[in-house]
Image (tube, rainbow, N blue to C red; front, side, top):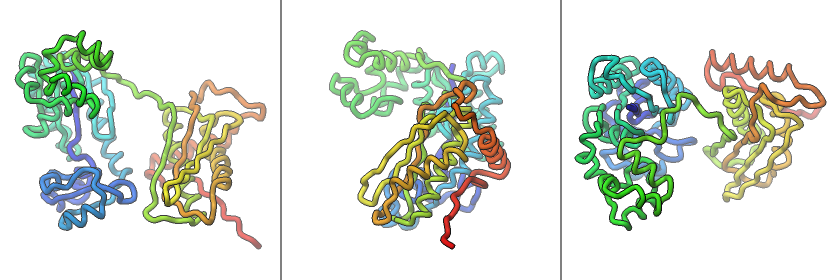
Length: 385
């Protein structure tokens, strides 16, 4: 048995913790640099504000809604509190996103001597009581069915147990395009074969899906049947690469502003890299112009490193090569590639920079104590005498 906990309107719910007076109002949280709507309260949804609508359009069509800039550091802190409850609830937790996680709850009905509907209700109530975040909880035999259970829970009581014996009734009216993992092209192909609901998929033999959709099609059918080929992974996979990008609030060619934005991206990328105990062998820089032309270049390092002090020098070299004072820019970004475990890195002929790595670790400790971006390396301004 698998449980899925999905925080409802997570970014908006976090904002309501800071400002309870916004409850009951159409509230929207905006993307980076206030570009578009990325989270909506139920009132905003009922008003017809669409997900991803640009801010200028939203304000024009829905002037009475409340539009808030995102506060990712605050959302991450709330997410950590919610995840702590997940870990207390189940020893096997797979974090799916900042506001979502799968948990293995096999035999929990015997352990707690209660049915799974009550277990889902208890988890929902505990998270709401301890964090103030409303969470929808679905329990079923597979991740796909968990997603369907949560979808139903959000429209009813915030918790739902989906037993196998009631699947036919539930799936009969569940459209294929809403099934987790089914994209537009797959949904179009399914409908071309006369498969319009999840129940229609169950009524087709698995050989049909193997022939027309391959392994993914077979996994889809098995998941709807309650057999999961994707068990809960109680560990977080290390990334193959790390990239940080953002758009600016306004177009600019200010060299120092651009340089600081690049260094801040590098700082956040390095912190994430060190959290996974990784080091990079290649560093990359991206600058996007006002008319969407992209300059992108990389630099291979002499030896792999996770030291921000060392990588700063490399990224600034790339920046000096890329920057053109006659060009207007709209966004910047940094990428770290060829990531390897720090413990097994090969030493260079010049030795490893232990002092630089110690500086990076100290910065991480300060940030963990005082908050994200409370301290990071900057660039020295060269002033003429």
